[in-house]
Image (cartoon, rainbow, N blue to C red; front, side, top):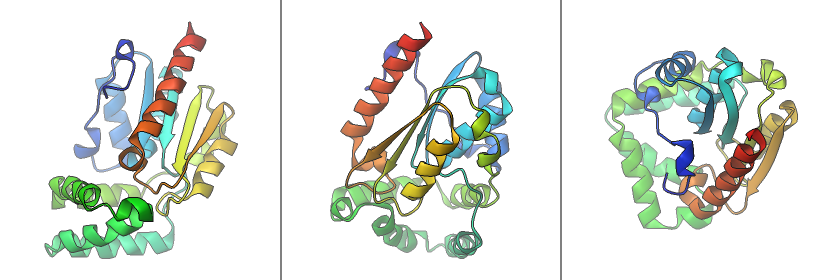
Length: 217
């Protein structure tokens, strides 16, 4: 947050903790924030941002979509999430999240015990109820590809080059679908790009925001 231009009045929303569907998260976000918006979302946050752009395209001045996916859930991942939910509900979340860290990070960052512990603690702090609700929301997410070609705002698409959760081809598809999209690859980085390469992500995001502000002026 400290890296973002203060005159854009950046804030973090918690709508993902208060709704059970991507569509409802987006609707709540729009209802609670007036005027034109620049939305930046990573992973599920990107899904919420894309849905907000579908619901209120005239209010979206820009989108930054980080490590996210416009496609609906695949059958294989749907089943995998169902299994994860069963594990969460049995009270065995820690073991699964620790295992998932190796999947979420690039191998270089996965070898950093401090970073992995930060990730595991962050996920577990959300609580079982929230983890289950958010996974179910992602499982039934809408297909954003149907409306992305109609977007007319500038869009920044950023993805780790070794992301195995929202793979690079998903970001390539996003950039190809959106008329005014800029695609940035984060080298030696997995899914958690804001944790793995924060300085690079902040620099690229800040540069894009400044250019967006200049363009609007």
